Image 1 (cartoon, rainbow, N blue to C red):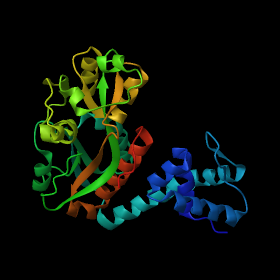
Image 2: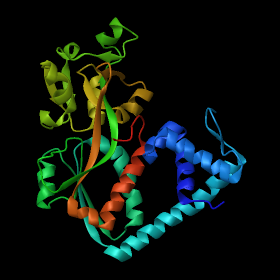
Image 3: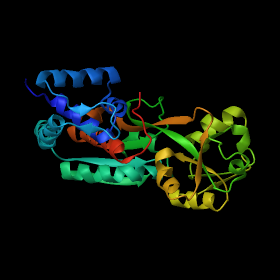
Image 4: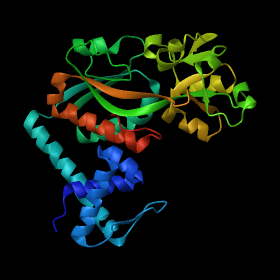
Length: 311
């Protein structure tokens, strides 16, 4: 009848995600394995923990009692783990972080706030990776962590920790001809963007999915390219009919909710990418660095819409 930490963790994630499918992804389990875990818990206590197929998910009295216990124990256990890690490897250190896309600030800032509370002795510094090559700087030791969707596998001694997978979507004006021609349209082909101005961040083409994985493989060149450093500036240009832009689905979410722009998938199956946290391999031995990777990943799934667990 012993209550295990893994049971409390699974139940807490189920509440957070609202579905077995998303909870299984978050926990890196198959849906079948997670269902088996919950059945095991229910058989131990001879009580159901939640109502199957309820929308939204409803927990029973037994499930709510265990969630109350999880809310008490899990944070204390995490704090104890960090304390032990500090004792084992030292408390102080440096994390000089570079980011290759402004969209990442939406979830990275909450992650940094949480991390500062847990590791107040670690010196944090943050910069944009737009105007220099951050991955070579990481290998030289000028940086300690790079958030990137373009890993360079030729660089030695770099570990790429997958954070999550996301879909790149096309933002376009709500009055764009592509939407007027077919109100039920859901996706575009590369050829349909040949006459469009692409609005992008000011980085090289090889670091942009819209070129590397959508337009160039089809031999398509846009009518023009215009750059903007801020996501909100890009969306404003799109809304006013100055061009189209490809952005992560989570970055577009709030603008779609407000009706500023419309969205189409890039290709029938969509254009998916993975975001990584890149660190030097020796940094993984530092408890404060390893804990930042865990904090960053957990924060992603708490703050972003439409992302998936990276394989």
